[in-house]
Structures are given as structure tokens and as C-alpha cells.
Image (tube, rainbow, N blue to C red):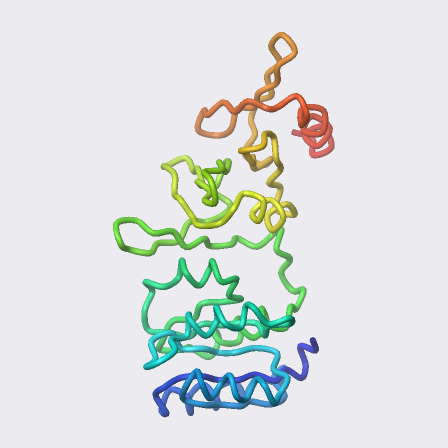
Length: 241
């Protein structure tokens, strides 16, 4: 995918919103062609005829919603990247589960849209390992964002994962194996079949009768399985922890 000549498709059931987004995207030098339509069914027809790098997709639409369209596209052999553009914060968790590249709230600001285009193009300006990724979590029906930099460890709970911070924990519908793969460059390593730990938060390594454990900021002590003990100690020594 070329970040300098992206072909994108805008999908929104409100024509004024389509026109505004098309206008903003055409001003971005990284975007080569902007297609548009006002229904998910029309978007599917376009995608059968054209190769598109990314969709800028509304969520609340009659018929097939934006989330439902994204689910359909996830079954494509090479699905386009998805940027949700919506007036509602409540669907951020679902968007995260669908591996959306970005989640932009209306009214759309030009600089915010430019960041979404950068993410679509995969520009290396800000590596994932160093970016302060914001994780959407749901608390009492309200979606809030937790900084990945604040997460000390992650615990598997079936097909879910519980994110632990110094202030509490949050359940997300993402398997531990997925987070291990995606967050590895940010220093999250497996220390047990059901645990990932964030190496920057490890404050102490304890050995007792051949059993290893680590203490993270906040005081939680986590048991390290024998299988992962040597690898963890080598990683910590390498990082100078």
C-alpha cells in the first residue's frame, strides 16, 4: 500500500457528511482518489469492482450498519483498512475488536483526520512500541480510554483479557494471544500461560526455592512459570532492569 496514493471510500448515509469528508480527504497529499456512497450495500458493490485501501465508515446507517459492514469485510481475503467516523463514542470497544485502524469522532477536525490517514498508510513516523496507545474499555455502559503505558500486566480470562493498572482493572474482548503479538514490541512478555507483564513496570524479581516471581508497580506479585523464567530474566538483564 502506498501512503502517497491511497484510494479511499467514504461511506455515510448523510450526504453533507460525505461531502465534508471527501473535501477534507482530497486536500491530503497522501490520498490519490476518493470514492463515496451513502449506503453499505452500495459500498459492497464498489468494493467488488474496485481495489480500495481504506474505508472511512459511519456506524449508524439504515440497513447494514457500519459495524456490520466491517464484519463482512473482515472475511475478505485482503480486507481494506477501516476508519470509523461517527458522532458516538459508545461503539469504540466494538471497533477495537474489529481491528479498526482508527476511530474518529464527529465533527471531524482536519488534523485528526490527517492522523487517521497516516495510520491507514502505515507511515513509520511513530512506531507502535513508543506510541501511547489508548485502549477503549467499557465501564457501566460508558466507553473510556486507558493508556497502554499505564497497564502493568494482562490476565487471560477465557476469550477475554483483563488489563491491570495501578488504579484497577478492565475487561476487554480480546484474547491474550492477540495482545501478546500486538503489544510485544511495547515490552509486554508472557510469563505464564495466562499472564503478560509489562517489562517497564517490573520493579523486582524474586527467587524462592527455585520459583520465580516479579513485582510490578503498585505492589502486585506475579508468579513466573518455570518455562518462562530464564527468558524473562535474560530480557530484564538486557533492558538493565
